[in-house]
Image 1 (tube, helix red, strand yellow):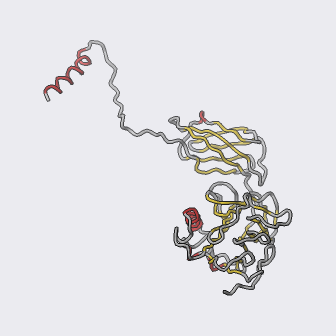
Image 2: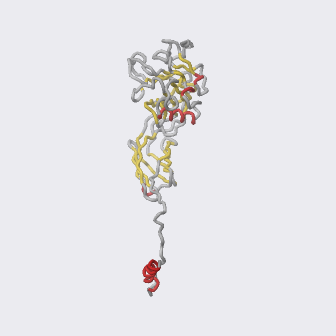
Length: 316
């Protein structure tokens, strides 16, 4: 112990005995936690035809932001804490996405790159319901989804997902088009013997035959409000709450959180066992309780895509 005290004295003695004035000692806690996490993009939206707002999870360095918008020149960029506001020189076109890439940094220099697609804000969307669909398609009767327009409006940007935004297997984004109440819109989700000019999903990947979900969003943007959803299952799968995959179980949980479906379990989904390529899932008379009680399976060859649902029901 004496040896340790003597060694400490020798280290301190030059500082004590020096005749010149010494600057105050500054102690640094080398164990203190410092921010080493880059900013994360939480959400973004176009607030009008030329202005978009991006929100990150922490304040940004306004001098360390670089943005590039393909096909549109950026007029100005302003930063307020964690929010970036972008003003374009030209209007965004309804129903057409514009790629935006950028790099941002926080106050400590942690940087992150991002890539997204900007969509013009549709100020006049219609209201829609998923009204009929099939999931066990054939060449003559591919997987299809029918939407019923319940109030007039512009379809631009409205997105129909096989799954939901963030975790989906296929989707269809509607173009700039006015529709009237009572109209039917049919989207094909698998390849087959199709007439010309059909509305076809991006990948034509088909829908989950036995277990799956559909969701309808106001736009393709993150956290876009959902307009409708439906969930189906065979009620015999045992894994992941009866849905067979972690992604689907996560999707159903998300739809329940958004109040677009009322059950987290496969037992609460529409029973898909008796459905076929011509025995479609049909909504009953516009009912919308976000439950399997809104749906029935029509009789064989009674699918009526593009017109009012058949009232003939399949009886096992």
